[in-house]
Image (cartoon, rainbow, N blue to C red; front, side):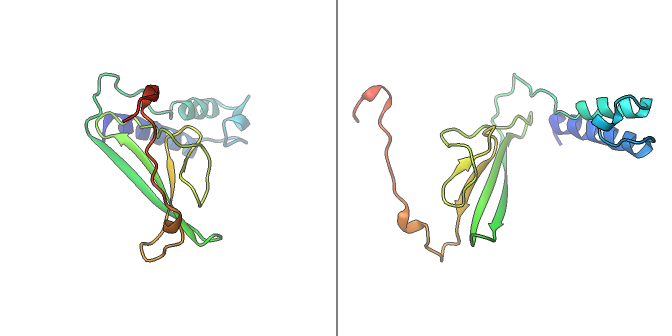
Length: 145
């Protein structure tokens, strides 16, 4: 586990242990307003759960991807949700060139751009592949190749 994940996990454990010993009427930070010290402690622990800032000096040479396959049962389609981060410092990567949203028909990204949502299909099923095309974008500055 890298330092980025260790700090995040430590904050989570702190929040869970405080929540386990908390007494009083509220369990969420908003419900804790005006109550016990334990409640105020849990509120600060939850705020501490934000991951630490990534190492600015890291060159990001070793990266890892997490892929989750989602079965969109109401459409009969599948989607791959992909996240990429640096294995050394844990800094997440942003996907570029895709619109934000969620669709079983076109590749999109989450609002912050950290998760690509890509429609996929089994190779034997050819519902989308017949619509596939390849486009070469123009070179920057209007130059021709």
